[in-house]
Image 1 (tube, rainbow, N blue to C red):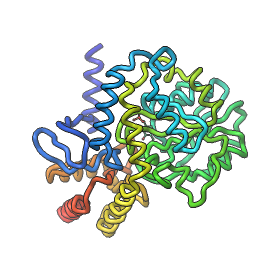
Image 2: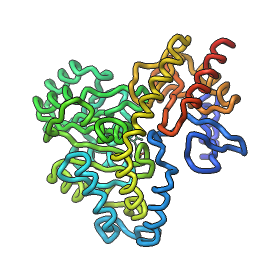
Image 3: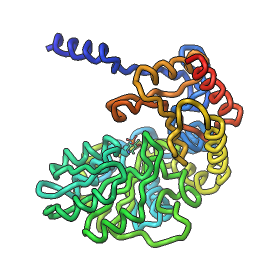
Amino acid sequence: MYSDLVERLRVREEKGLRRVRRTIEGPQDTHVSIAGREYLAFCSNDYLGLANHPELIESACQGVRRYGVGAGASHLINGHSSAHHELEQALARFTGFPEALLFSTGYMANMGVVTALLGRGDAVFADRLNHASLNDAALLSRAKLIRYPHLDLTALERRLAMSPARRKLVVTDAVFSMDGDIAPVDQLQALCEKYQAWLLLDDAHGFGVLGKQGRGVLFSASQARAHSPNIIYMATLGKSAGVFGAFVAARSELIETLIQSARSYIYTTATPALLPCTLLTSLRLIEQDEWRREQLSRHIVQLKQALQSLCWPLQPSTTPIQPLMIGASDAALRISDGLREQGILVPAIRPPTVPLGAARLRISLSASHTPADIERLANALWQLAKAG
Ligand SMILES: *Cc1c(COP(=O)(O)O)cnc(C)c1O
């Protein structure tokens, strides 16, 4: 049995696909310490720079003192605290939905929604570049998984029109995690209304960053509009919010359905109450600190300008996810290694996470970077480009 594992690991190593963990010796920040050396990092999803914020740390400490460390049970037994409850109400208000429900992780939230709504004989329509958790959720639900080319709504409509499925669910990243582009929510919403399909929007990378006060992708259009009743909104709390967890916001009937039948909600211990305590403070900072989003926008503009005529192009992303397209996997790895030697961390993203020949450096920016940090990254990339 073990020789089979060893053989499979060896094949992975040979293909250059073995992944390793780097151990960070302190908090998540724009500067991290690894093996005693300090690095400037462009890897995290902590877009607003909240993961190590003193006010959040203080709220976590207060939460521990009030609620202890462990939740002790699942939400439906007696792990559901007033902190969880208050955060759910705050998130519903903030995102403009009647109700919200906390999940332990975004992965579990997607599992919960898809499996609670669909079963055999139903169909999930998924953008080809969606996050893995959405695909896994579709497989677990036993509904038919029908994928459509990235952002190709004509292809999506054809598939929706042809489908004999009883229940239909369109699932999409709102901001695509490896490309940084944004799904056309208005058009998706119209298609879903036309074909009576649910629309699950995974706003893991938009919540906190997009829209007025960081309210997410549904608020990023210029005029305010009511949410379509077909929309189920999901966002994570471990990225811009800087903490951990996720939530689903929707109509009350949908949330009640999740409480009754989402297995990834029911059969797991509630997150420690110190997390919702911390997240209430995080939500306040997301809402108040417009300067963090403004800073982020300035960083995006600065990076785009600095890399404008570099031999490797940036994708046309307007979000803090800025992929620098390299092409070959070994070249992407070489550039990432070159940056690391100069004390800069940018991950190389290779197939199968991205299509063959589309390896890239995934630069993610944070409000807590400084203009000097961005300049240092750009200079290092220019140097590596010249060196060939
Ligand atoms: C990170 C991410 C998730 C998973 O969220 P976790 O809370 O980390 O489990 C789901 N969907 C997308 C698009 C993500 O980027």
